Length: 381
Image (cartoon, rainbow, N blue to C red; front, side, top):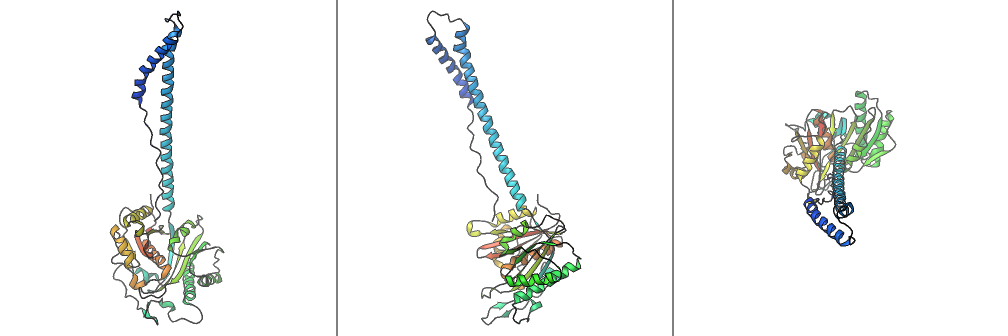
């Protein structure tokens, strides 16, 4: 997790012991009078202003100046302490403002083993759930789930390239339906170079120009880069898309999936930053959910909660964020690095329906990534 910054407090102030200063005054006056009498010239009268000045007035002035200096030092220390604390509070507030920045998502497109339509995936948000897709076995006996829209397509091109092209066509369809004229100013991609090229060529062949500088993502841990790259221009879009597939394994059902987000300032759903829980490092689910709740401005539990797998669901359960009935592994499988993005996309669909929705997934062994999506208007702070 990324915790708020912690700064050392100001050094402890030593209080001015004014009683000691008061007790010291008679002693100072006595010593001053004694010294004056011992040093006073013989035969010179003592009932003179000079004698009283050196024996009484001068020590009083010295004592008063010392007290005033000590008072000024104490006042300056108090002022420095308050300034230090104000700077710390300002820095922490700025940190929370930065971490609470959200990604405004206008539209979501998904290709998963469930299908490629929005209705196919909205069916996963509430019971009764659709029938889980049927897995097939590879030659080694590992279970696989494929996206049905490109099932059976082959030839010399990989499924990643085929799915990337299909995903690009879904994006084009959405842009045409919305008569979108805003340019894509920022483009983020999760996947290999071949699928990126295939995706880009389909869009550019239809007149959609993508930026030359592509923000390449390796995992959902880099979502902060996407949020920070969101253009301030209200007449610009951010496109985040990607595809991945998991390596077959006897430990899970490997699958494939692709996603695309059209992000702009007209969005009705907002996506918070994610946090990665590392229980082995002493981090707790309660710390995680409290921090995410502050990001999203939640005053209680999210209205919905989705989990990609049982491990992430079990880890988060002690916090009260329960996805016991919404573990989507039978429908989505394990699609590798894209799995958290698929979960985020489903949470966005829930937010577009007006419900706050949390999600969680396993990022890697002993690391679990979690986030929240909220309807626009449910802003933090």
